[in-house]
Length: 250
Length: 247
Image 1 (cartoon, chains in turn brown, blue):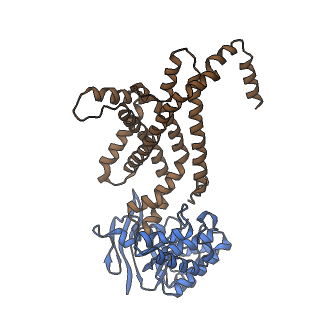
Image 2: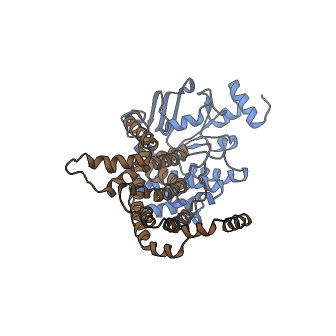
């Protein structure tokens, strides 16, 4: 606390502070830019919700594919591994540009041209690779004896996965998944490179007329207002579900 | 009637031969105790019978059916027997009652109301009727193991396999689990158990098998195997676990 106070004091007493305050923390500018930035944020929220759900489903599918045993599943395991390697390695921005600008430029009949669609697709493709690895870590953290117990009761492999392994795995990886969701929320701003107006792009437009950066700060504050309650909610929800730390008895 | 027939079973992990041409018959209603040092193959034998491990050679028959045939439905076979593990292996994310009803609901397709009624009756039998909604982590080791036994019994298996079920328990909790097994024995449950409790083996088992190096070295009524062992290795083992001088 004391350290924070010292830093705040040092910043506020700097010779350039009045100028910085005017450029970044101008209340009048903040108020005037709020509607445009908030409207942009609404787009971020929608992108985050839709992509978040798709990423969860696709990521889980990839992780399950990767953890399947037996030689018959080799192609699926191979696909999943190659997919994660590829999309974790590629910069999100490149995927965005390739899909958002490259694909419509092919001028194929019946291919959507909406930048929002392609932006969302790029985010889903990239993030699924990260989320799949998080899920895989969770699945592999469930002790083999849990599988043995489930199979010994007569449950099939699929039932074991559905009722015994995945519930424990998902609970364990909830905190890192939230990490990815928060990060997705911020990266959803990247689709502005395709010309879609999100909170950050709206802030840039507001800034362009007078070089006052306050709208960016407004956007940042709005992001915080979203992520903090979201993270607190998941923590509370995980506890309510009977998740006490690492869990497990073996 | 022979319920379980294990004939010439071999199982190796890499170069390590764990079961070596092992044969054993278990009659309906019989209780067979497997004794022997760690690594002698007791647990592996139980895991092979419950098809959690694939045997390399030999045949295992349950009620006259060859269950090691690759064409059999292993899930259906497993559903006909119960296995209880040393470390309980309860599902920590499910309540006690949900642990017990999982297999009846999903495998045997019993309606929920009937499955829960049956599970409660089972819990009552193992003396835990009041802990139905508890989580496994909130129970003592002995209670967890009794839940695990209830879970294994709820689908009325024809064979119960018990893998060192008291080894992970505090000494004062061993009694409650052994009492339960005595009751099951009295009800005529067919059981194969691996154990370090020689006193218990002597009391409940019809047959005691001494395993050494993946073979049954000595087999017979408890009084004979535990009281007057013929093989040198059996004598050494018993002397060590019972703290008795070698005769």
